[in-house]
Each structure stands twice: as structure tokens, then as C-alpha cells.
Amino acid sequence: MEDMETWGNIWYGEKPVPKWAQLRRFDHANLASRGYTKIWFDPKDDKIRLTVLTLYVKLWGLTLGGKRLWSFVEKGVAVDSGRLEFHIKLDQFRLFKDLLKLYDSFETPSDSDKKWESIEHRFYGALHFKHFEGDASWPWPINRVQAHIDQVGWRGFADKTTTSKAHPKIWIPAVAHGLSYYSYKDAYIARRILLQQGFDPVPLLGIGYLNR
Image (tube, rainbow, N blue to C red; front, side, top):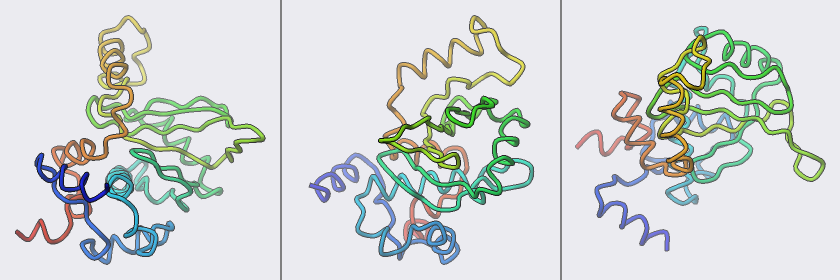
């Protein structure tokens, strides 16, 4: 089934998803240090590998306060189509939230440690962080965060000073986001957006494709 899906994506113009051997040593080190080793990575299906790669590229490519967002990731704990969950280093968790509050490139997260979210102020390909409250049957530690890439961000045109929901900078992207709410699950589209926006192409396409 995976092979049929892979060839189907290639038929429709999608490049194959890189395996470990098609990544740089630099990427090997960054991924393996967070638990995404060769043994973990290669057996996974295309959607899971591409989810890891798109979010790695996005987190590595964005900085707040001179720190790459990837540097806050301590270890991966779960991955699903389009969604990556990881632990942030406990001693840097407060700094992480403070930077999201400080810079205009992200929506200010709430002060709650139980449930909060913060989305990038970008219309296409917006990075979206979420922290869930959890319960006894579904524990969610304070430093566990989910990240995904929304095709359309609901704060796309706004900055922290734009608060009225009636403002076009708020309601236009909010409606577009609602219409494409589950689009974050498509890692192939996320890859296309990242490539169009000039993010690092090597982990997204693999060394072999860039040399062609």
C-alpha cells in the first residue's frame, strides 16, 4: 500500500521523500540528537518521514531572539501525519514562551501552563504550536508541545496590535483557515510551500535530487 501511494504521489509530480542516506551529516546530527535516528527514520512511511522533515526545516529556519526554534527541541515523543510532538528543554521552556510573546512574528500565547497555543503571523505555511491540558488518562507535561504547519494561518495578515475580530486582517485569514482546517495533515503541500518560501531544500528533496 505504501509503495502504491508513493508511486501515486510521484505520478502527480511529487518528488520522493528522502531516506536517511539522502540527508547530510549535518541533518543526521540534528535529527538523531532528538531521537530521529536512522533506525527510527528509514522504516517509517513517506508521510511520517516528510512530516518530520518539513517541521525540522521550518523549526531550523526560524529564529526568535537569535535562537533557532529547533534548538528548543529536546526530544521527539510522537508524530502523525502533519503533526510533530516533542519535549522542550525544561530549563528553556519559559524562555520559549517569552520569545513567542515578545516577537511580532507569532501570536502571543496565554499565560496558562495547561492550555495555550501560538501561531506564526504568516498567511501561507504558518507554524502553529499547541499545548493541551491533558488529564489522568492523557497526560500532557508542561514542556510537551505539538507543532504543525497550517496551509493558511488564521492570523496571517495581523500583528499583535490587531485585536478586533471584525478587522479584515483577522476575519479573512480566519475564514480561509477554517475552510482548510485539516490541511496541516498534508506534508506534501507543506513541503511545496516551504520550497516556495526559500527554506532549506536539501532535507526536503534529498542530496540526489539537488545534484540533478
